[in-house]
Length: 173
Image (cartoon, rainbow, N blue to C red; front, side):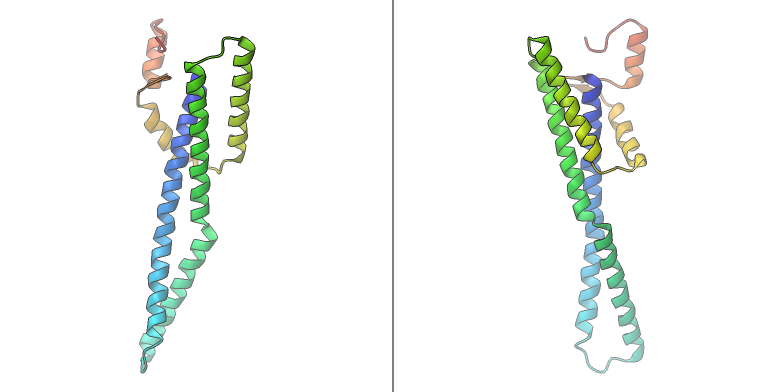
């Protein structure tokens, strides 16, 4: 259960962080597209514009179209929403694991059923969640693995955990 908790925690953070990154990129494409198209549109109302300025306006118009097309093609806002929804789903599973550890069913069959239900939810989410670039996920995982998590599931850095295990101490005490 502790490993499932760790994986849910890592995936939750990775999806939230990547969703935020995609939202930021959405604005980085959207704001220049608005500014460029507004500048080009406003310039068409001016009379007596010389050829060089018209050429510059034509280039700005093309740049505006390219930025708008990239924003549409990359679909950053929808992708960001999907990552944040996946992060929320991993968070819900993480909280279900916390509840199960805090208030475990007395009956072994009920515990097994609860774990199978959580496993099914994790499997479904892993299959449907959008992919996160491995370099980004590794960076998030590395940051979390170096931090102690002293709540219901006591997560300690893996190096400390392996040292405790080699000394015969249990990290869950």
